[in-house]
Length: 295
Image (cartoon, rainbow, N blue to C red; front, side, top):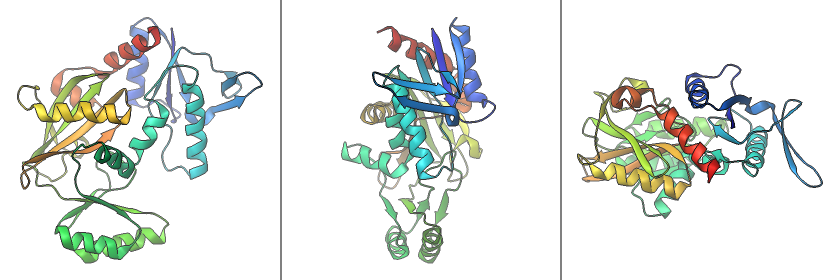
């Protein structure tokens, strides 16, 4: 079987290399496809995908990322080409599903409309709306609407600061995304799902309000019997979003005594989870994809 891994960097990053290695360990052939070199062509009787001048002939693909800081035209081109690829062979995660998760607002909205608990959130281009939301909630977290690893997330308690942040972003043609600050008990949860199974989960413990492993948090493994609610929410979330695998962030809020889905990452990192749990996601993801091809 020939399996592609799709990314956009010249040199495959660590997670992509690990997927390639997992493919080859299982006796399959791997190919690395750069997103910006992929083209699609509609012919009289088919859709063909090219990588540069070479026709792409594969049995399946793993999509890891198709680029950051793209203008809307390039973003839509890459998405459209990947959707064309997904019309011919199994691609996980499905490009159309990843489109929703790349946008924190649309992801949270989809979850909310399907009755999953999410934090109170506002997306706006209006500095006064941001100011009023901060005044009402007392403490909010600004997040880039497309981002990961906790980078750029900022705790704001001053309404004037949220006004200024939103005004500055508006001048750059960018929206603002604010979420109510949850009173976590010093940790939250990362639950890793593949198919219909949780393959590993951990508490991310930190002295900071940020609990991302990339921001210095420590991962501690947990079992479903210890705390079943994050597991249930994670499984429901990826089903609603139509994902094959994902890292789901869940938090417990001491103020409301409730669990909330914070984010769902369709291109998750797994170094922290592997260190905490001993589980190796690349092997499980590749096995899952192979099983989809064989169905």
